[in-house]
Image 1 (cartoon, rainbow, N blue to C red):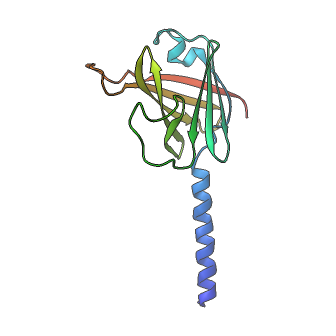
Image 2 (image 1 turned 120 degrees about the vertical axis):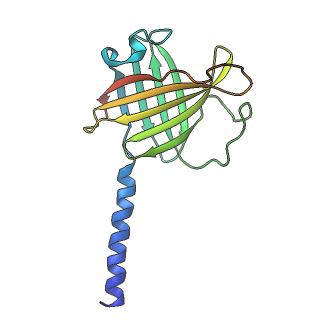
Image 3 (image 1 turned 180 degrees about the vertical axis):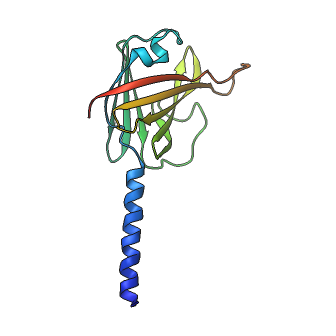
Length: 168
């Protein structure tokens, strides 16, 4: 086999592997409505109980943006897609609502966002998974109390909510 033929084969394999990497990150973009019948947040497992929930997820070249609306209360979290540098301690990490993409591969997107809840700094960790057909998204949310607070259980029980895609 000639050197140019080997290089062509290597290029084809490299392109195939590169396209697999792109396909590995699932597309969560769209408008998602919470299915109250299958969601912990609507079943009384949370306080307060959420009756109406929606997530609007958009992606640009620079960031992933998740707008969450629960019973009319709106929160926007932005997740930079470029590595902004090493993490900084709580209290100096910037605006609440700017989070970290912990993992985005295969069928899972895991994010962490610092928030103030009842006067305490919490990290909201959300793990999103798509159904095989991409029509449903399951979100598992866990709250972690950050440093400086004495608590026998610094992590909440996971809350699982199911969302149905209503618009791409």
